[in-house]
Figure 1: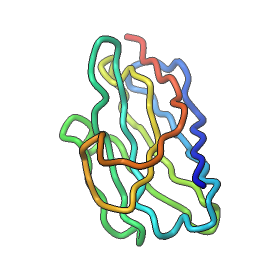
Figure 2: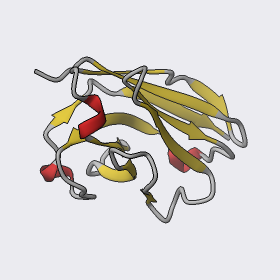
Figure 3: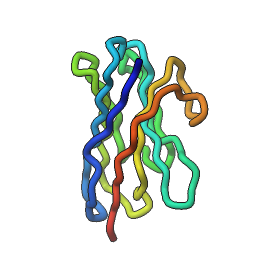
Figure 4: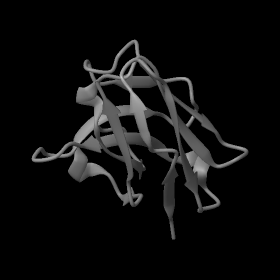
Length: 122
């Protein structure tokens, strides 16, 4: 059905930048809302960013607004998360997700990637 594979996570210094990618295996990528979530040690998985199927509507968590940018390339069936001005509190496993509907609630999302670790050192 749908498979999501994240890549790009690594160790970076505070203030640095990183670009995460998520490859979508399904042939109906353009019909899905795509999102990024993250889970820090000892915490619940939380919303980071979302982009609608058209690519023209996005939303971000307050903690990343102005620093992170979500985008998608429907022709390449890929969604991206550009992360700038990274902070130690951004350290988490980042997950790509797909949904038929717009939502910031974890349980509402239908498909998930395996996650990619982002570690920001001070």
